[in-house]
Image (cartoon, rainbow, N blue to C red; front, side, top):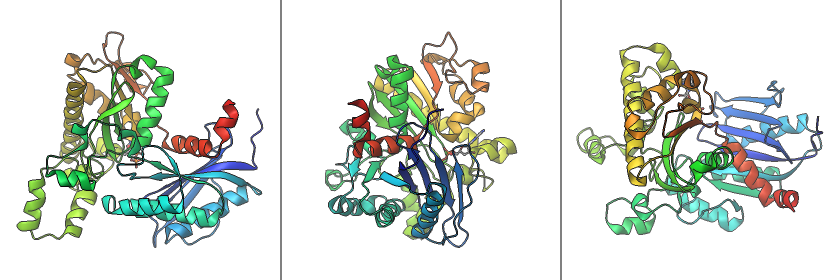
Length: 400
Ligand code: ADP
């Protein structure tokens, strides 16, 4: 077995509103040495880390009421497992890169200022991402920090998918359809290039169906339409987020119900989607499938309906479809949702092989299907690690 260089590595950080996901990667290779996540950061914070064999690591004591405290506990745990570890770079998932960041970027004071200015576009996420970068800078002084953006993949998209039909001054101010989940789409297109290059030369819809969910139409490797828009609320219904909604509903909440913006935000982000439609039963698909009652069916039926509708729209704007790719926790694991989404799509040349679908094989379309249907297990952490390696010059050294 090849020796792993334990003296240096790359850390990837994904800081959410109440969670912090980390992975420690070796200098070479795609498999992390350590993965971990802090959940419910606050009074009930929890932290768990695993080694490469998925064995739990003894977690260093720490204050899990803040992101900085959780990161300190994570770093202490990693250092105990790999004494003498030197980090070559830290890669960060950053939700918003605004109109200008189209690639990963080395973090400088000027970059941090610009990311801060974008916080008003993603107030629930961006401040945590920036706090994660600052905490990593303090913990690892002098180590390059690399920001990787969820919006970057979509930046070259056509104007018609980038805008809303409201006065143009809003577009100029940056009120645009940015699209998200870009790190996942980046990974999936890279994998397709490797395993199904003919699809990358054609028209593909990628359905990233997880707790957060979106879809992206990719033509010759480029994003040409995405279901998420200005915020991560738009498009498909999600675990607790509403997805596409008539803005008139928000006016009704404001005018008739006299809700304030904080209350509306709470409804749209935390009480809607699968959870809302199932009458509070569950936000996660697995529980809804297991519940198998009228409330669960209501939520699942709507989810499937919206995925199909988006798929039809995306195929239409690309003038057809050559491949449909499922990824994310639901896309990768739920045979029921994949089967239901693909039902009645024969007109689109989609026919799945039920045996392969039940096994969650990589290729799930039948031999008669004109359109290739696949499952790709997405790896956002790996996209971040690769960007960090590139920034630290490791990848260039390998290929030289
Ligand atoms: P996040 O967006 O938080 O990264 P994930 O991509 O991990 O979310 O997806 C979580 C979703 O995947 C949940 O709705 C979960 O119930 C669903 N899921 C995971 N495994 C299965 C399964 N075997 N069957 C159905 N749904 C599943």
